[in-house]
Amino acid sequence: MRSIGVEIDMSDAKSNNTTIFDITKEELRGIASDSGAMLLLLFAMLIYTIIYSVAYGREVVECVPIAVVDEDKTPMSREIISGLRSGPNTNLAYEPTNINSAKELYFDRKVSAIVYIPDNFERDVTAGVQGNIALILDGSHLLIYRQVLEQVTADILTHCAEIEIMHLAAAGESDIVAEAIAEPVTYDGHILYNPSLGYGSFVMPSIVVVIIQQTLIIGLAMLAVRRRNMGIKSRGVTLLYAAKIVAMKIVIYIAIYGINLIIILGIIWPIFGFPSAGNIFSIAVIMLLYITAACSLGLTLSHLFRRREAPLMLLLWSSVPILLLAGISYPHEAFPEWLYILGHTLPSSSAVNAFVMVGTAGASLADVEHNIWLLTLLAALYFVCAIIAERVAADKN
Image 1 (cartoon, rainbow, N blue to C red):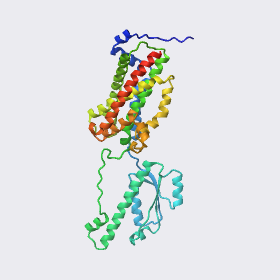
Image 2 (cartoon, rainbow, N blue to C red):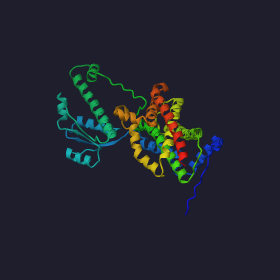
Image 3 (cartoon, helix red, strand yellow):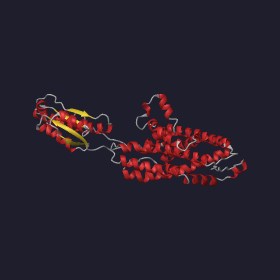
Image 4 (cartoon, rainbow, N blue to C red):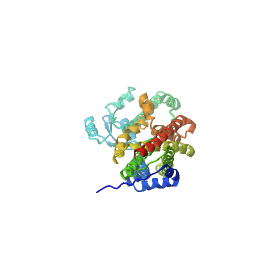
C-alpha cells in the first residue's frame, strides 16, 4: 500500500499571511490528535506532582523499627528503653536477650538499628565512671539513619543530663547550679523554611521544575516526529515566519504550564502542606523565563529525532543526570568546576536554585539575580537556535 503524504506549500506570501490564530490552532490540533504528546504536555506535570506528593506526603520517616539489647536490666537501663519506646522517630519492635539474636533481626531486615546496653551500665554511671551504649545503624539509607540517630542521641543525652544533675545535687549544689553545670549551653534551634525537616518539602520544588523541562522536550519532539511521519512539509519559510512560529508555540506552552503551576501551587501543595513563601510575581517571572528557555530548547532538539520512540529513550537516560546536575541529590556547588558549568547549560539548573530560594525561602528577585540573568541568556540563545532549526528543517523538506 502506497503511503500518502500531505505536502503543504508555504510560499513567502502565504507565510506572511498566516495569522497567529492559525499557528495556535494548528499547534493545539497537533497536541489534541497525538495522545502521547497530549499526555506529556497537558497532564504529565499534574500526574507526576500528585504521585510524588502522595509518596512524600508524610514528610519524615517515623516509627523506624529498632531492637534493644538490655544486658544491664536495671532501672536506669529501663528508663532509657522507655524513652526509645515512646518515639516518635523509632519503634521498639524487638527486645532480644543477646546481641547475636539482635544481629539476626538486623540482617533479616526486621530492624534498622540495634541499641546495646552492656552489663554494669548503671553501676559505672552511679560510680562516676563513663558508661557506654553501643548503637548499630543502617548507613545504607540516609533518612532512616538520621531519624534513628537523632532519636537515640536525644534520649540518651537527656537521660545523661538528668543523671549529672542528680550527682551534682547529691554533692550539695543547688538545683539551678546543677542544671547550669550539666547543661552549660542551651541549644535553641529555629529551623527556617522547612520546619518539619520534611523530605517532601525539600525535594518537591526541584522535581516540579525538572518535570517541566523533561515533559516539554519529550512532548515537543514527539509532535515534531509525528508531523514528519504524516508527510506534513513546509517550504518558503522565512526567518521572520520561523520566529513567529517559535514565539507563538512558546506562548501556548507558557499558558498550558502556567495553568498547571497554578493548580499545583494553589491546590496540590496546600493539601499536602508543602511550604510556599514566595512572592507570586517573583515566581511568575522565574517560570516565564524558565518555560521560555525550556520550550526553546525543546523546539531546537525536536528536529534531531526521526523515530517516535527516540524522545522516550532520551527521557530514560537523561532524567537522572539532569536531576543530578540540577543539584537535587547533591549540592551543585560541590561539583567539579567543569560539571558545574555543564549543568548550567540546561535551564533546569538555574531554575531549580531560583525557584527554591524564591518559592520556599521567600527570597526576592534581587537575591537570585545571577540565576535570572543566566535564564534570560539561555532563553535568548535557545530561542535563536529554535528559529534557525525551524528554518533549516523547512529547507530540508
